[in-house]
Length: 82
Image 1 (cartoon, rainbow, N blue to C red):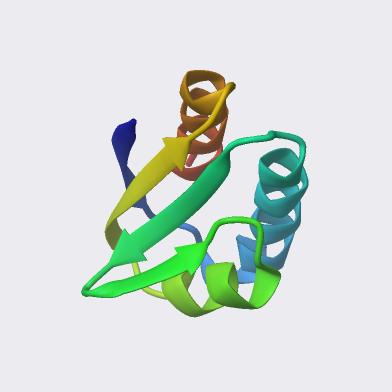
Image 2 (cartoon, helix red, strand yellow):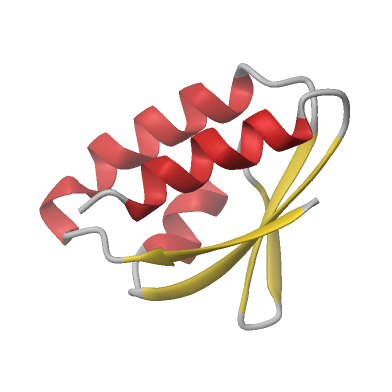
């Protein structure tokens, strides 16, 4: 399953959003990845998340597993919040 999210996380909120995102992603059994500009990372990796989310713009989330749909919905909601 795939979803697209538009990332517009203010720099002063990046650490807080990253913590919330990683905690949520880690709660799912599915394998979840985030891709942007040819780079793909494990969505449960804090360092990977921080490296891709410093810039604003569109990212693609992919999930495979028993709770993939639920995972993508929850994680997209976190990224789309302003």
